[in-house]
Image 1 (cartoon, rainbow, N blue to C red):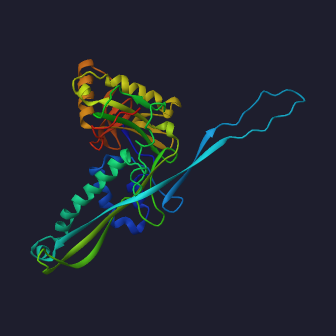
Image 2: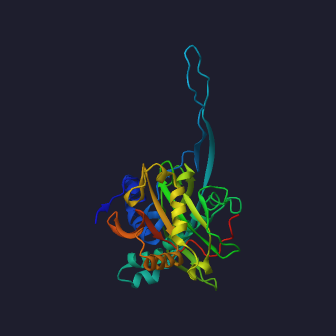
Image 3: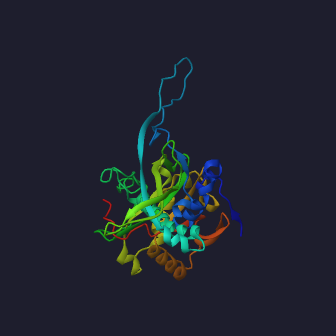
Length: 334
């Protein structure tokens, strides 16, 4: 089985290139285990302070067949600029000094307390990657769901469901010109973990005691360059899916053929495209239904493959990441 490596800049790569951040690389390694998104995300620094300004081409120039002794009409392409904002999610942990004093490994105790904060932030960022909308939560960023929210978009596939018990499956291409995570200028990528030292606090009775405090924060935003490299299967009725009444392969096929990278013949093994990587995201309920459909029909599109040294399931060479950040109570996309 061939191993497919990463040929794009990932979060760990970014940290290894910046000396002052090497000390928290283990935190980023932990995020890979807690957050499937971080295994694939393309991360870059914002180009406008706390925002990312993206120029997207919306129209091509007109051309004409020439004739002798006839001039060439002038033309130009059209573009549109989109500015995406970032937000930050944060938390504070506190460990009593007396607990650290009686521990054989104070560092391990503090890390055990830090781990839930890392997981909580990772889950929060991953959920908002799909569902955040600055129209309703301006302190966050604009997620993919707010961008692919209409069936008039050719890259949004209708799963046939209605009501509010629906789910989605996503094909996302991470890359410099496709979908990017970004962080504000002057900050760092991923979660920063800062030791705030000894702090004095009071209990419920107002009595003071001391402990060590740590601050966790992630600055993050989402920017989409060429929207044609992503596709969403929306309106998958959960009850119908569990009952086996949804043709999951028909929906996956439609979403696959909507991808721009597929049209250009650039989605290769491991979902690799030019300067990017296409990944499929689905929750455990859909994965179980997909497994059942594969077993019953002996499909060949779904198979294990080694991607970056790890065995993962792939669909048409595209890695599948299981994430329960994708909820099962989505309103129907109209």
